[in-house]
Image 1 (cartoon, one colour):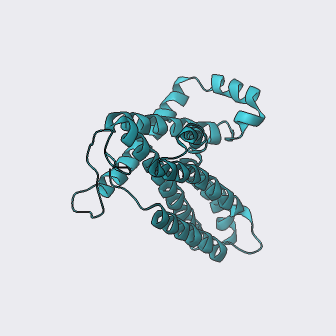
Image 2: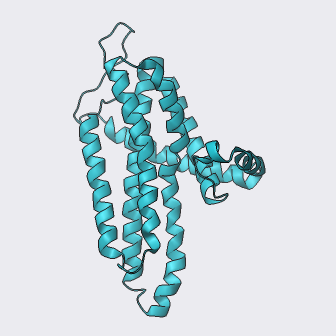
Image 3: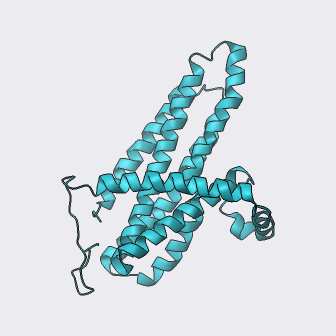
Length: 239
């Protein structure tokens, strides 16, 4: 796997998020706070990236190995927040009715669409790069096959998390604050429609991530690549 510079990656994603927020400030009416929730959702998409960056740095420094497990668990808990933001596109339906009444559908609707797509792009890139970082850690320690098993599991979890968040209106922190309700709704979600939704979303996430992975690791794309190496290889070598 191609090794990414965590500092450059952080700057790039932060710049993209800043642009998204800037577009929101320009497009959103100062007296209309309807889309303010997008700022919070974008922040939640950053949480798994912070966990993965910490894990990636610890792994490269060969220190704090024991911390990788809680960081991984926290990452798995918050990762669905990144793909979830795509479902916020449904708010366009609600807003379009208002714009039709105001006679502004020809402009405001498309501004909102562009803004939501930019937020979605920023959140998805942030989430997928965090997945890439964790896959790099697992690939180094357990091999390429197990790293892709992890990716598949993460995509399934992401799809299920989107289901719980959008359909059942649950949050990541319900694991700590309302476990009884979480358990009840998870049991309720075991049905054919929910399973299909989860599988479909997981498939979409996997396709998008595989595309990003292929672009990052394409031959001639530049950057350093690490080949498979025995455990005694130099630190920072990735398979």
